[in-house]
Length: 133
Image (cartoon, rainbow, N blue to C red; front, side, top):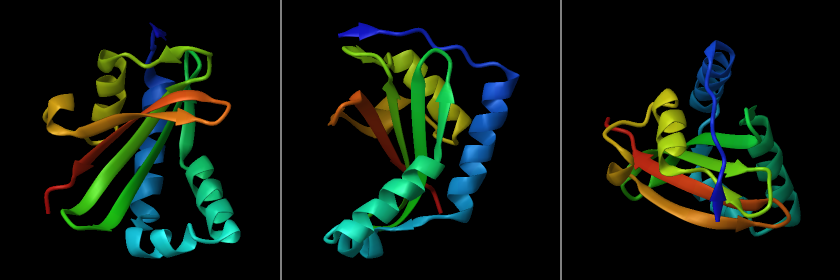
């Protein structure tokens, strides 16, 4: 797959800061989410929440961020990052640049990460990291 360059300036940093603050105000309870996803209305509500917790960054990136409570390992940060072009994925450097803006620490190798094929929207890279309590 091809990669796409990422540009982060003051406006993008401000948008990512606002996204981080929004996620902190609206944490996702994983037990509640697991039950909600069993029903179409719950799936729709979760999609709406994640859409509201997303920002677009130049050039063609979409970043979604949430704070998830109730994992067996504790509260986690969860970022999903994709490129809105066919056959494109964010490169590891771009992923980590954005992840740091959202509070991730220690490097990508300190996180769990995987790719996810999005229906009609290419491939997202998901990054999850426990938050030290």
